Image 1 (spheres, rainbow, N blue to C red):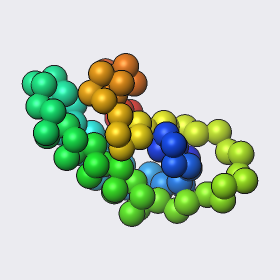
Image 2 (cartoon, rainbow, N blue to C red):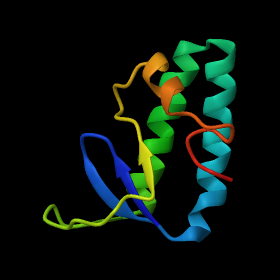
Image 3 (cartoon, helix red, strand yellow):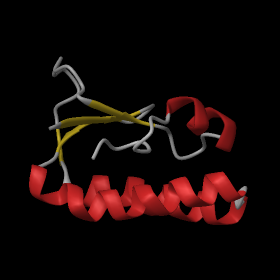
Image 4 (tube, helix red, strand yellow):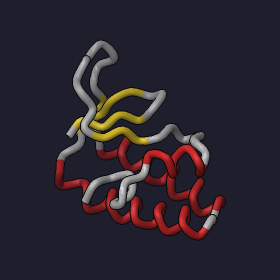
Amino acid sequence: MIVRIMGEGQLELADSHFAELNKLDDELLNEMQSGDEAGFRRTLGALLDAVRRLGTPLPDDALEPSELILPSPDASLAEVSEMLSDDGLIPG
């Protein structure tokens, strides 16, 4: 799957990594719902770090459609709320 981190670029992630990412996504969703700003910051950073660690960056000149778009590390709680589906940021 091709994942874009807003403001950074695209990475290719194997489907096998999504169980780990979904755990962080669930945690992020819970923190957002409870208004835990510090937890939200920490977990958003951990989620994006995991995507960077597990993914393979695509070249800057690659024009692949992104199947998943994640917020930038400095996105606000309100901005991330607008990006959420019922499953959080990551489907499944």
